[in-house]
Structures are given as C-alpha cells and as structure tokens.
Amino acid sequence: MYSFFRILQAMAGFMSRVIGRDVSYEPSQMVLTAGVTPAIETLCFCLADHGNAFLVPTPYYPSFDRDMKWRTGVELIPVHCRSKDNFVLSISALDQAFNQTRKRETKIRGILLSNPANPVGNLLSRKMLEALLKFAEEKNIHIVSDEIFAGSIYGEKEFVSIAEVVGSEDFDKNRVHIVYGLSKDLFLPGVRVGMIYSFNENVLAAARKLTRFSSVSAPTQRLLVSMLSDTRFIVEYIQTNKKRIRDMRDLFVAGLEELGIKCTDSRSSLYCWADMRNLIPTYGEKGELELWEKLLNVGKINLTPGSACHCIEPGWFRCCFTTLDKDDVRVVMERIRKVVGSRTSCG
Image (cartoon, rainbow, N blue to C red; front, side, top):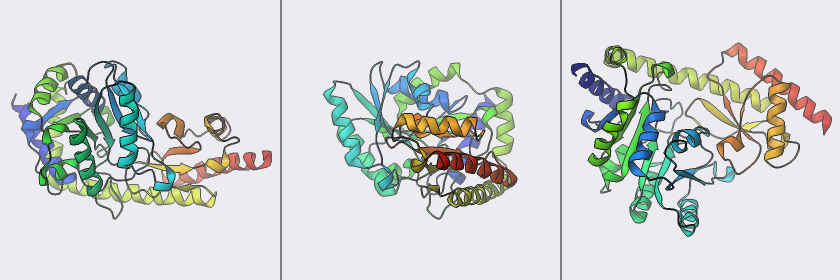
C-alpha cells in the first residue's frame, strides 16, 4: 500500500510540473490504470449506459472507436470540424450534432475532447474550454478530456488544461474528467500507465472498483516513483524532448512542402496533418484509400488516411514523424516523390 500512495503522489507532482502550470493535482482524485485505453473505457462504464452516446470532434484518434465502443456499447457521434477553420471545434457544430442526435432519441452523456488534438495537433484555447464547460452545464452532460500529449507542446502557444479552467471559474467540477498517461510524453508505451483524474467522488469510487481489472503492477509503480520524483531529470527530459519533436516536425513539414504538400498549423503531439487532396484520383473516401494503398504498396510508407479519423474532407493524412531520424526523413520524401510522380504521370 505504501508504494501505491507513493506512485499517486509522484504522478500528481509530475502532472503539476509538466501539465498544469497553475494547477495543483490531488493524489486523492486520481485512479491509476494500465494505460489510457482502460482509463477511457472505465469512464464510459461510469458515465454511460449501453446505447448512450458521446460527442467527439473530428478528425479524431481512430482507436477511440475501439477503446470506447467495443465492450461498453456506447455510440460515438462525430462533430465535424473543417480545414477552413484549421479543424478547430466550434460550439455551433457541437450544438448541431447534439440536436441531431437527440432527434434520434439517443441519450448523450458527454463530450470526448483530445487536447492537444490527435491527429491535427492543435490546442483548445481557454475561451473555448470555458464555452465547452458552459455548454456541458446547459445540456447536463459530462466532459472527458484526453490530455495525453500535454507535455509534448513545442510551439509558442501554451497548453491550457481543463483542470486549470474549471479550478479558476465557477463551473460544475463534477462534470469534468481527465485522462492522461506516460506513453507519449515520456515515450513509455510498454510500461502501460494511465490515469483518471476526476472531481466527481461517485465516478472515482466506481472507477476504483472497475480498475481492479487493469491495475498497474507493483514493480512498475516502484520504478516510476523513482523516475517521476527526479525533478531535475523530468524537467531536462521534457525540455529536450520538446526541442527534438519540434526540430523533426519542422524538417518533415519542410520536406512535404517541397513536394507541394502542406500541413495544418500545429505545434503539439507527435504527428502532422498533411493535405494530399490534390493527389487523390477521385474526390471521396474511395480516392483517398486508393492513394493510401499506392503510398503503402509503391512508396512503402504507411500513413493514416483521414477517413480512419472520421475526417469529413477526403485527402488528409496523419504522418507520424517521431519514429524517424533525420536520414529517414530524406528516404520518406523520396518515396512520397515516387508516388507523386506516379500520380502526375497518370493525370
């Protein structure tokens, strides 16, 4: 038990340093899970019944369809965001999706946010977070905020956690639940450590019982207590990591631009969101998947097509550049050039 409380304290200290500039995270409001996948699924079980729905801004992480739906029976309602707005969520789009879903007599239990966004990499502003909290109160629904990339911000814009906003204003905290894990910011996917942070005591009580089936092992806890408590290491690591992500992102995006491929303006997470609409043979999901197959079979590179992320505009692709080194970027660009040349010769 001693080790268990130590890991909660270590996680709270880590989050306060890395994520919430003006937030002091309380260990008593945390529930540990074996990764973020069970954290999100546990919140679905806590907040919703079979057949209920969550609103999810698009494009969104493809595996939400698996993580949230397979065992819980909940429905995900895409809230479509568009390129002309840099795929930033609007309250009007959220309200439209809410009303259309209610007409089908489907009960909506909450909104699932990715902040920073995966795959686009943009950030929700404080103003938008305040508007979302007001919307949730008006509609009597919850907000689940996935902040797993919060320590991977490498632009000038600062990350604002919903915990910071709800703590500084007169909002209903019981509606706010945060998920976080160490797989992205610390590049520890195999360690399988995730967390639910909630202000709702009923949710915390239910989550503690459910996570009995997805607990973090004692050896893992002891290892992480030592690492997360090393403040100097954590600060230096995060700073170095942000610089390396930024440098690789700039190099990768510059390479794409030389090929006539532009990306959205993003400065967070491990991906870039590339606009290949002018390369798809026909406008639509079919044309997008044809390009994806050509990139895979001819170029020997695997990108994530936008349709997998429920993007309403065909031709966008998620590119993960953080698995590469600088020499790899040149190889990837040559392979994309081969596909671009093939497409040009056919067109």
